[in-house]
Image 1 (cartoon, chains in turn purple, orange):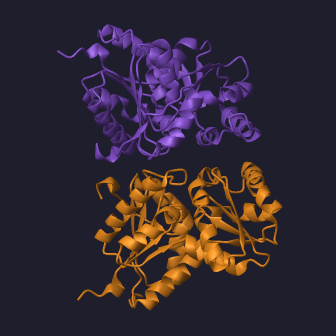
Image 2 (spheres, one colour; image 1 turned 30 degrees about the vertical axis):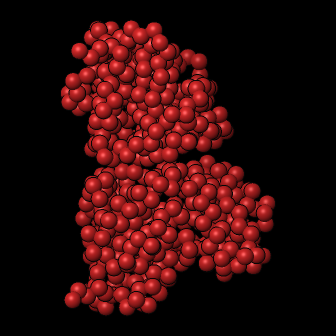
Length: 271
Length: 271
């Protein structure tokens, strides 16, 4: 009988943003092996339709299943918003998305019951954060705001640039007018803008990073299902991409502080 | 025997930018029927690798061949830079890219033999504009500058916004320091930024829009090969996309000033 506990955890995102989630897994579950997939040939997902993103997510989970993963983490808000409920139904292993854990954390943290959610067009228009937050407490008012330039600004290494500050003020002003006290960073790129965003919203607004909350949920699910790794060895993580590995490796070094040289390119369209 | 003259012209881009080329075809070759494909599920191409973009371009030409096109126009600078030479060798119908016509126009227009080229990271790093411009006149100095935020700024309808002006000044300053007198708009989105770009470089720098030049080349190629349409009827153009048709139709209305309701979504990965 296969020892499911020693199997890896599959983690995926459209790109490198989900490495912020992988990093939290490495920190909190250091014995777990990760198989990470970045869909760099088809990035970004944020402005694409539900059908398209769901199709991509199904191909990716088919690929991850070939690596015999024991659980799947959707480390991308757009893919979680569009594919979490379907994948959870379709797969016979645990699936953890970033939206539900982020929503629960926001519902716990707000004092005045006014929560802002920023993310891609897809994530914000799906209104999934609002639904999950209001499932926790129906009195909470949720205000969404898509910030489509944030991802390209992060990718251009302009996180603390004056242009990014200008855009942050524009995007966040309508949320501040609603008197929010809690703001969900509903895109895995956004924690890299934390400093700029906090300077705009001020210290009285708490920022929720779903990556951290997601790993707490993952840990609980693995515990409940008896799937936590018992290995004492340092795991050897695997990384796969759909476009050239080089730029992924550079970004991974920055986010994970890890030298990676085993990234493999695969043809994701064949899954 | 099939009358090749009455067959359509296949035109493709990663998105709606190539419609600026389609518009020039409609204006200059009003009897030609167009089959347009926008790869909206995998947009953008600009920061992806040559292998990936070439693979996408091959799938798209396979699809366009099923529509019995008599010629193919690569209405995307990145795809032209990465796939034009290969597709020209592989296909037995004429292939026209936007880079060569744009390069020739720039070589004709410059007086001081200093030309700037702006485009995506892929187009600029390919140095294909420089090669083609210097094939025309080896004394011309070519200065490239990638402007990765221009496409998202156009897509956010911020063409004349102060943030776009700020970014244009930053991107174009190094080219102005080289004393260029001609600037190639080496991405099909950039003609939509013409006003902002011209205000930064001043009236003494001429802007080259490869879309216009491309259609002159297309016309010449069709003439030479006896492929110009002799139809007197208004052609009924066809539009295909790889993601949801709705947002394409909206953009098409703006760029082409045409109400389109026959856009079909296809599964491009199966070609």
